[in-house]
Image (tube, rainbow, N blue to C red; front, top):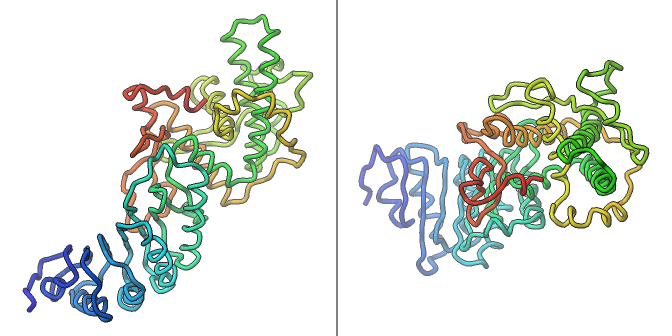
Length: 403
């Protein structure tokens, strides 16, 4: 017997109670839990029919402590094509395959699905998330979106949130750590060029340190400037910017570029970034030159992961990393979009007020789901990423993390 609940907008409970509370209501989101034994063959159809008696279209389905079988996914595809949020909470590891296979089969019928969440019985320690784990997630989200183009946000096996860039639809893990940022950069053909340039520079620095009489700070900043202009050259070409005019900047010193042992081309970065509010900032137009040099250098150093292994074995990497003979690749529009977000994230995390970036300015934003949420580079801890602005509070040093 149904109990009229005309003002009810969401419901959570056992499936058997749907027929009591949902008919005639304004329910748009349903949460169902059923830890009990197996039901009859039409069990899923029965509670689906009760849910469909709501006066509103069902937008969200959440299944928790549920016994999953193929009949459930058949019902979802046939009866809930309007759903835009779908969550499956698992209690046993062997449920993963059942849920993923069922989801893949039904995705072509879910034309409005934008959010998918998979909750595992045990959370992964974020400090253990490496690029192999991210690659596994990436293969899944690609498989999902090939069958459901509307999908925009996923939470999968790594417990890391995945989202899609606004224009290209490229999937990215929202994992703002050195590992995550390296994964981003590795999606572009520029990553190998950047890595080779940084390793060569660091190998040369090892030689310079033994023969340079200048003060340590001055020597260090000259080295940073030299690396920054080497990285700047690569980024300028990758974004299709030709060589600058022959005008000489008053701050430039031609000795910064002269090195008989180096064959690197050097230019100041001319690719603009965007600040926290999305306003364009021309490189070297604000702040001291040293800050722009550090920003550009760190962007290059991010391609060396794990960083401590590279830094302790620079000579070996310089010897054995393959030389890059190909010209600097010009990025396509999708790659530029990705690289620009990486640059903006680093710029807004390590300069000025360190507010990070507003996700709505970069990612597909169904129903305004990102709101004013921002993302700042940080360090992975057990259950969260600690932003650089809070590292001192937990006894960490951002300089040691980001080079």
